[in-house]
Amino acid sequence: MLKITSSRNADAGTLKVEGRLAGQWVGELSRAASEARAETPRVVLDLGEVTFVDADGIALLRTLRDGGFALAGCSSFVASLIDGGLP
Image 1 (cartoon, one colour):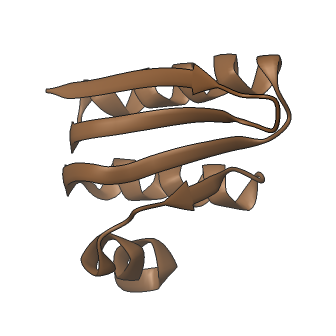
Image 2: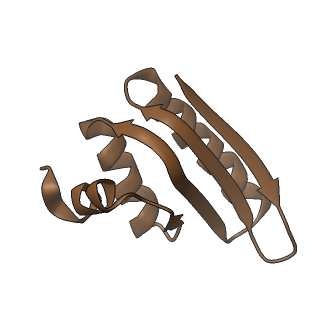
């Protein structure tokens, strides 16, 4: 299960992501990120409540980061996976 909560202020949009970023939920985050980017050029993904990320989720987070999304609140384990812990 994944919960995505969107908020926005004058400077940026934020997507708070909670739960498991795996399987079908990877596509949901991709869709939500695209919608958020359409509303504001600066989007922060708050990953502080993410409990699990599969390989597809890691690939999406890398793509989003490389596309200019800011990643915040990652556990050190998830951050290490994003930075190259999985192929």
